[in-house]
Image 1: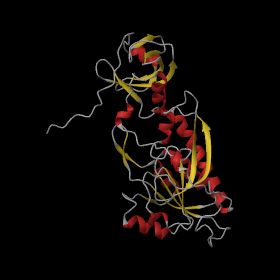
Image 2: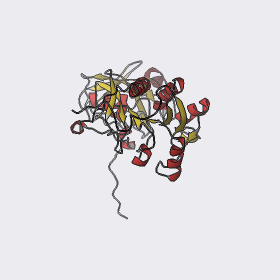
Image 3: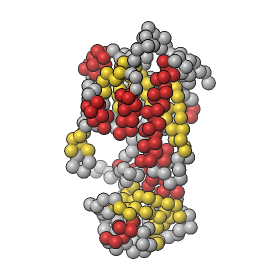
Image 4: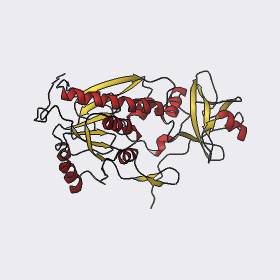
Length: 339
C-alpha cells in the first residue's frame, strides 16, 4: 500500500511558531472531549459549527447540541447552518480563513468547496478502525456484530463518506459484556488524544498518509426504529450483542403479553437455557432468564412502561412476572398500500 508523508497543500507558509487557527465541526456528546482538548491546547478555535438545535428527551424540549453548550460556555462563536451547501455556510467558513478544520461526528458530508477552504485541509476523527464501519453508527454495529475490538481513525477528508486517506489509528478491546455506551465513552476520550496527536504530527511533518483499502470497506448505517426490537428467534449470543449495543440508548425492547413495551438491559449469555423463543424460563430474586432460539439470556436490569430503568430485583418487586411469560416482537413487516 502506497504511503506518503506529505499532502498537497500541507507545505504552506504558515509560521510553525504560531498557533493554528481552527474551525471545529461536531454535534453530539461524542465530540465534546475533542473540542475540550482543543480549547485546552495551544491552538485557537475560531468558531464551532454544529447542527441546528432540535427537540430532545420525552418532552422534545429544544436544547443546544452538546458541542454548542461547551462552545457557549467557552465563549466561542457558534454557527448552525441548516445545510453546509448554503452560500451562508461557505461565506462564513471562508471569512474565518482557518488553517485547519477539525471534524468529529458533525453529521453531514462536506462538499469539495468547503473542504478546500482550510489551508491545511479538514481532518476527521471517525469512531472505527477504517475502512471498517464507515457511516453513521460505527459503535453500535461493532458491538452488535460481536467485534472484539473497536477504535478511532483520523483521516484527511475528501468528498466521500469516511473514504479519505488514513492518518493515525488506535484500537481498544471490547469486553464480552461491554455496552455500546461504555465503548462510546472510551472512544470519545481516545478521539481527543488521537486528534491532538495527529495535529502535532502534522506540524512536525511526520504524518504518514495511507489510502484506505477499499476491498475491506464495510458500512455502519443509521439505526432504523425496527432495529430497536429484540427477536428471540436468534441465538443467545446475537440477542445479547443487540441488547448491549443498544444500551443505554435507545434500549433494546420487546412486548409484554399485554402489548406494552419492555426494555432489556444487563444481559449475560446462558448457553444451557432452553424453551420457546421469548419464554421466561427462570425467575430468581434478582434476575430473569429468557429463552432464545439457541440458549438464553439472563437480565440484571429492566425498564417497565412509564418507569425508569431499574435492577431486575426492583422490577420484580413491583409486578408479577412468572415463568412461562411469553415476550414477543411486533410484526415489523411493511404494510401494503391498497390505496
